[in-house]
Each structure stands twice: as C-alpha cells, then as structure tokens.
Length: 164
Image (tube, helix red, strand yellow):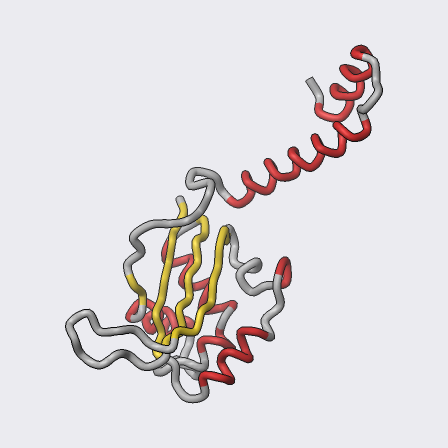
C-alpha cells in the first residue's frame, strides 16, 4: 500500500537560509528521500505564500514537503521526521528538543489532504519498479551484444542471460 503525504509548514525566520539548506541537500542515492524506505517521489518546495480562499490576507512563506512511499502513513511520517530534521527545523513550532512523538504530532497538525498521486506505477512497490528497470537495462545490453548472432546462438544466449 502506498501513501501520498503532503505537509505545509509555516517557515520561521530566514527563508534564504532554508532555501540554501534545501539546495545543499545531496541528490540521487544520497538524497534524504532515497533513505526513506519505499519512497517513490519526494519534493521540498519553498512557497512565498498562499492566497486565502476566503479572502483573508495571504499566508507567509511555507515549506511544502511531499512524499509518496510504500507503507503506512505513520511510517512515512516517521521517515520524513527522521530524514529531514535539519530542513524542518526552519519551520515554526518544530519541536527540535522533543522526541519523535512530538515531531510526529507536529507533522500531523500540518498535513494536508492529498487529492491524487502522480506516481506512474500506482500498483507497484519501489522494489518491483527497480527490478523491472534492472530487467530493462539487462535486456538492452543483451540486444547490443546479440547483434549478428544466428537464431540458434541468439536463443542460447537469451536462455543463458535470462533463463527459460
């Protein structure tokens, strides 16, 4: 089961420092989102503010945190809290001195309802997607190496590479 989770967190203090903190985060396999078990997609966006749909004044700056991960909402929330604490610390009310339960409660207060997910494989886990990508890469490499083989050689090479 996958969970799309989004939080809108009011930014406290220096927005430029928050943007710099986010820009300094590693990408790819070293990204904090890559360390969240089963994470398909993760985003951090600093918003200058949002209009009040009831006509009130716009909000101040907000940090949007969005994660789509395999597992439960509680697991995704705990993973975000554990992996993004240095970023979340730039937000109002972040319980830096508190324990994990305090951070979990704080995140739950700021969660917004997701209307949909943009995950391209809604029924596949991250591990299933990785296995499929591995097969695709192996098949592409096989196609290059198999160029010029006779049908019998091609069949034998395919069975050796992929099994029956």
